[in-house]
Length: 328
Image 1 (tube, rainbow, N blue to C red):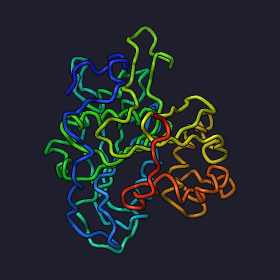
Image 2: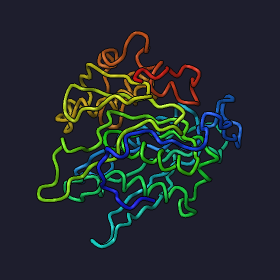
Image 3: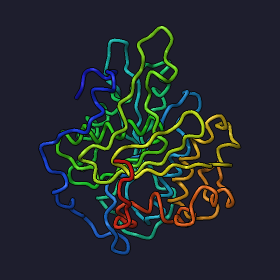
Image 4: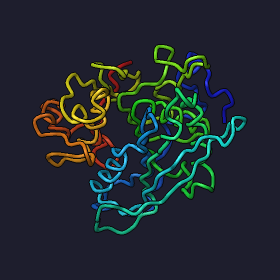
């Protein structure tokens, strides 16, 4: 859908002037009744950020996917989209494929064709120092795949869409929303977790063309955007104009006690959002556990240990509680 996947971001930072009034769009259809009469979630798409490529897909994505399913008591399909590198140096097309997974949580509800929980695994190409691939190229390939019959998905224009992206993955999700907007597709909700699109200020591949990611921007076709970030240590997140922004000043524990300790604050933004989905004490992303005292440090009294922020603003929980943008 775009050919220059590594262009400078200054040409992309302004919100699109769409011809369609997205604010006037009607609610997307709900195909089947949901548990306890709640709204249909639609497609929830989750993705990670930079990865050195040694370990594989970050385990927190599967944990978050399962936590959302458990929280909603959904019996919908869950899957994983894998992104593979081009087959040759002269091939500019990424290879995407979807794997449908068996639910790991037990729910007592009928199946639904309007709920899909999918994680995007692009770890094979996430080390930009080696691959030189920007998030714009990934988002473009992803948009084409999601809208093609190969994905096996219902048409995106028929589904509520909730995109969740961490670090560079936040750039992918915003760029994906932008591309869909050009097709007059409304994105219900975008959640960015410590967004860090690559710029010239980041380490760049030596002796190669710099990798510049697509900007993290709230485009006009995004109904609601919430952004959770920290500025304590590199890689730092950033506020987003037009979104609800929540900056964490202290994020102790959890990933600080793992092999990811060097990026503990950056990763703990993921843990904080996970704790707004999984309200158990303590929540866990499999091998990483958020202790009760750290949970209380993460959140303000008004946020009730995470129960009244983050995933609470999704259309399935309490969309009427969504806060107004606090950066205009």
